[in-house]
Length: 229
Length: 235
Picture 1 (cartoon, chains in turn red, brown):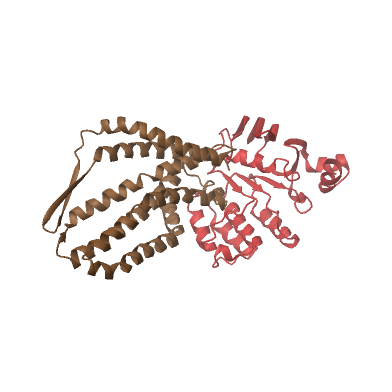
Picture 2 (cartoon, rainbow over the protein chains, first blue to last red):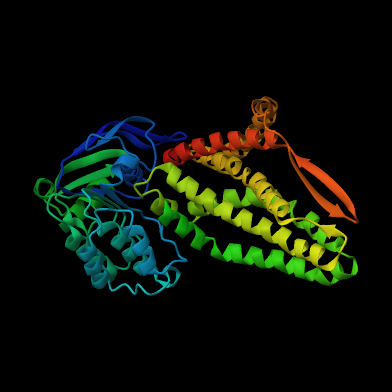
C-alpha cells in the first residue's frame, strides 16, 4: 500500500506537487492523468525515491522511498534510459541479474509480443522499439508495484495500442500499477481508478466507472472538456 | 558489484583502448630519437605524458558520472536495488584499472628504451614496480575529489553546477588545511627510497608516504560520503 501525506515538492518558487494526500490500495490499476507540468512525473519519482519531498511523507508498504523499496517496485522512466552501446539482449541479461523477482517467461513473452530484435545494438533500435525494450526491462519482473511514467509518450498511435496490450498482458492479480499519461484515449480502458492532476494537485480522484457515470462522459472527455478545456 | 564493474569496464572499453593506443603511439614515435639520444627522449616522454594524468583523471571522474546523468541512464542505474557503495566503488574500480594501465604503459616503454638502448641506466624490476604502483596510486586519490563534488551537487534540486564547482574548490581548501594535521597522524611511516644507476652514479630519491596516506584517508572519507550522496541524488 502507498500512503502519501501532505506531500509538497518545490523547485525554486514552483510547486511541482502542492500538498497531495493519497492512499493507494494493493492490487489496483491506477491512471495518473494530467497535462504536461501537472506533477505526474514528479509524483512517481517521489514515490520511487528518485527525488526527495520538500515536505510531507510517503510510505510504500511501510517503508520510505529509497533503495529499500527498489526490490519490490519497478519504475518505467519517460526518458530513454537504456545503454546504447549494449546489444538489447545483453542489456536485458545484465539488468535481469539484479532482480530475484525476474520472470524469464514474462521476459520471453514480452520480447515476442513487442517483436524486439534483441540481437541489435540499442542505438540501432527505433524510438518505439527502445520504449518497448524499457517496458521489457520493467514488466518482466514480478514486482508488487509498477510505476509507469508516460509509456505512451512520443509513440505512434498503432504502437500505443500494442504497448497498452503488452502492459495488460504483463499485469497479474495483486500487483499495483500506476500509469501516468496525458494520452487518455488509448489507456483509459485499463484504469480501475483515475487520478486527474492539475497544477501539482489532485483535481479529481475516483473509480473510473463511477466517474464516467457521474460526468456522463468518457475519461478523455472529462480530461479535455471539464478539467483542461 | 561484479556485474556493475563488468558493465562499467565494457562501457569504458573504447576510451581505454584509445588512450592506451595514444600512450603507446607517443612512445613509439620517440623510439628513433631515444636510440640517438641514448634514452634522453624516453625520459622526456614521461615528463610530458605523466603530468597530464592528474588533470585527465579529474575530468574522467566527473565524466563517468556526468555521462550517466546526460544520457538519462541514471534512471536505469539507480533503479537497481543496490546500495550507493556498489555503484560508486564499481566506477572507482574501473578508473583504478585505467590509471594503473596508463601509468604502466607510460613507464614501460621508456623503461625498455632506457635499459635496452643505453648501458648507462639501470633500474631493477622491483623499483620499477614500486614506482609504477606509487605513481598510479597517488593519481587514483584524485578520483574521490571529483566524484564527491559531482554527487554533492546532485543532491540539490537547483544550481547543481555551481554547487559542484564550489564544493570542489571548498574541498581543495579543506584538504590543504587538513594535510598538515593528516601528515602528523602518519608521521611514523618511513619514507620509501628508490634508486637507479645513471652513468655509473647511483641516484636515490624518496617518496613521502605520510602525505600519501593522509590523502588516502581523506579520499576514503570522500568516497564514503559519495556512496551516501548517490542514494540521495535528485533525478
